[in-house]
Length: 116
View 1 (cartoon, rainbow, N blue to C red):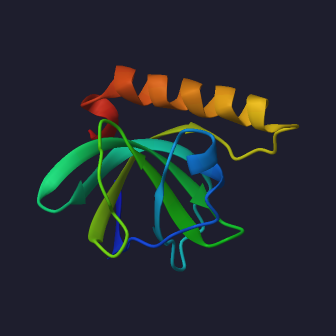
View 2: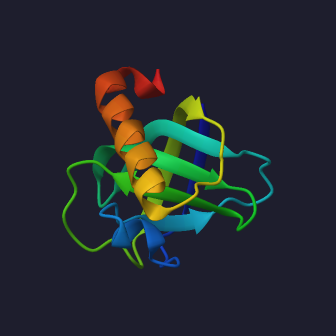
């Protein structure tokens, strides 16, 4: 299992505009790419999450399941579990939204086994 820590920062806002707000931390030197099931710890609580390792932008983008609140500026720890799929481009926002919805459903199905 790979673990990353950093301060949550704002991204481009695209995932949020699709209904999946994310918090981002730097990916660092890692060569990871794709979508993962995992967990995020913030403010002493752990949340299952769908996580996108974006090699091009050098960030980990985490959508925390069942989290409501502000994450920006908070220290976060992201644990990557099972890889769900490779990164890919989508023709339009509807295709991307459908893919993210499927990713989130898969994370829910795997939890809490996602980080085992």
